[in-house]
Length: 189
Image (tube, rainbow, N blue to C red; front, side):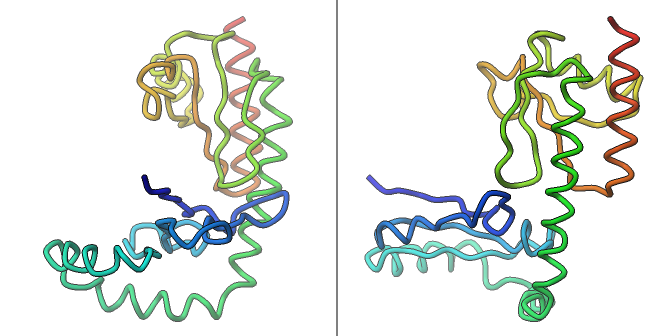
């Protein structure tokens, strides 16, 4: 059995630094990307750290799937390390937005949600409001003009009563969205 650790959100944490699985074993398969912390979403560039016995088999497999990442993506990734202060400022902005959202959710009628110690999403239980997360998200989008994601995108069995909310936006947009959502929610009660 192999441990595969998806560490795509390392660097976007709020209560201390995330620990890589490699701290505990050199047998883990670690996956990471430039998409999240490094803010290179869409550039499709990342890396894998493999145990020694998997390096050759994975290399042979990958050679059949792609030649190399685009040159421009590689150049951009190389230069992104000159901008760590800006990237850390993004994380500080996410943390502030997280606090705004976590404070607003109870006023919307959502009292059960993840602590969101990392990434830029809150996963919330909406059973008190709806047992159909897809219909709920459609109504919020159509009527309050706020985009949230139904839990069924992540859990087909229990996601009907959950949603995921992204707070990777400007503080002003998060505040406005929370106010519109609260007003919409209040009109439904």
